[in-house]
Image 1: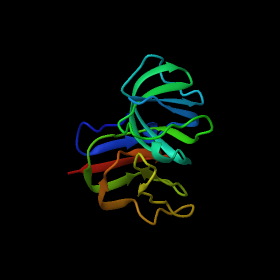
Image 2 (image 1 turned 60 degrees about the vertical axis):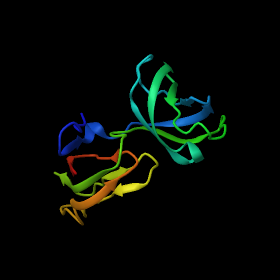
Image 3 (image 1 turned 90 degrees about the vertical axis):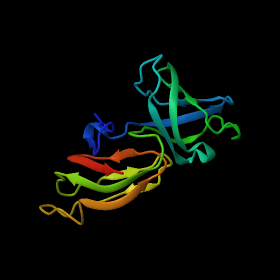
Image 4 (image 1 turned 135 degrees about the vertical axis):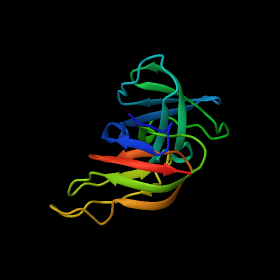
Length: 172
């Protein structure tokens, strides 16, 4: 499981985001009711960090905290931007589990440990913008890179793809 209480942060493939297709978003002012494919969160649970991403989400893209889980296909999210318009059925995009939601942090270095050939790592912010996207090389090689220096993590962190190995992020 993700370790962000200590420095450096450490993520394994178990921390790769779970992705659930959205079917609707209802703006209730203080909260957003999101309907999705079966998500697996415990009914009544709260506190999970969520990212809404995709071209059909519009102004609702970004990071949220789950207030409660009313059912196996709905989550109630804290609506920090209450002035957004209404959305209805047909919202297209995804709800992803987020590794970090919080203030801006400076990643002094990012290290991908133990990559295997022909795999990709993708770290995004809560809006779906790429933070880091190294790719291993052709079969039998590793490259172009597994190490990066100085990246800003401004709008949360989603481990969108981490099929193997681990990611270590030293933050300042």
